Amino acid sequence: MSYLDQEIHEQPRVIERLLEATQRTIEKLAAAMRDRDVRYIMIAARGTSDNAGIYAKYVFSAFNGLPVALATPSLFTLYHKPPRLRDVLVLGISQSGQSTDVVEVIQEAARQGALTAAITNDPNSPLAQSAEFSLDLNAGPEKAVAATKTYTTSLTTLALLSAVLAQDEERLETLAQLPDDVALTLEITEEAVKQRAERYRYMEDCVVIGRGYNYATAFEIALKLKELTYVVAASYSSADFQHGPMAMIDPGFPVLVAAPSGALFPNLMDFLTQLRKRNAELLVISNRSEALSLAQTPMPLPSRVPEWLSPVVAVIPGQLLALYLALAKGLDPDAPRGLKKITVTE
Image 1 (cartoon, rainbow, N blue to C red):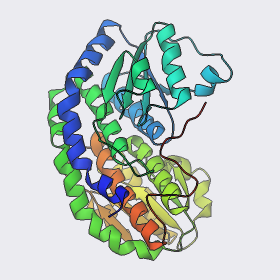
Image 2 (image 1 turned 45 degrees about the vertical axis):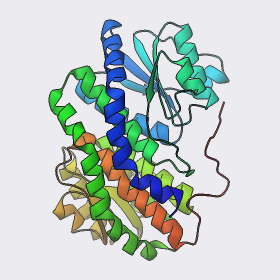
Image 3 (image 1 turned 180 degrees about the horizontal axis):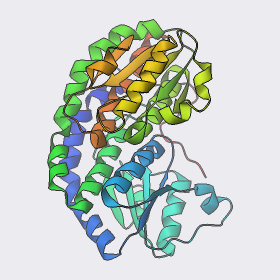
Image 4 (image 1 turned 90 degrees about the vertical axis):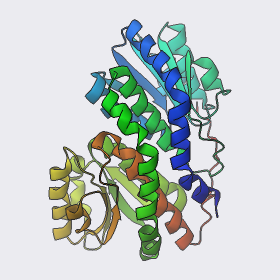
């Protein structure tokens, strides 16, 4: 068994550990956000962590009324023209906590007197040491180059902070069920994905579609396919895709769509119907039978997971697809070419 395989399957346990270990620190951070009258959130991140930041834009705006911006680190590190940071939580996300540009954003925010926090899997890292609050992912060592459990624990941390800040007991109860939902997703999806991976062995390009909360899912699954299988995977929202890129769809062109229940499901069903009429090769991640029935490769999700939390489970079929497709292509999922576990950027 590869490290990647092990780490994908560790996710129920590490999410459970995170929820138990991190809530007290998150409660302190939420209290500081109220005391400091935080008006918006700025997130500094790269790669997989940046995709978690996309999720944050939805969950904090929808439930906490807080706009979320993704930082432009080069303004801090290369142009030396950082923006003014007032009434803001500046949040760095990095599994290693080593990326120089993310650390510099947090350090500059601290110099300006802004509230700072870090989400990282290494509480002794430069990022954690630079922030006023450090939120430990508690994911344990992640030896595979491609991040899996640190992505889902980052999403869970953001969801937990949102629920605690809103003092939303119903959402906190839903979060407590998340480890079981992740375990169920692995149980109901893995064999189907494993059996279908060979079908895509010679796939060279595809598109990955998500919208709303699962816009982040599209970016993360596309990243995993690029990292592990070298497929040219482009990520889009379904809305943006219809403004031009739809023209590339020929019969048999692979399109992976994350379409769980929620406010956007009717729009996504219309989108899937359009793709089916064009004879696209559909891979569909959903907890709705009418969406799964349109797919050549259906990837089911647990029915009870609400839309705001669905990105934590919806990414898992994509992780499994990247793993088993890499194996079908004869690639080592633990050693993608030209990549290292820790990437330091300026």
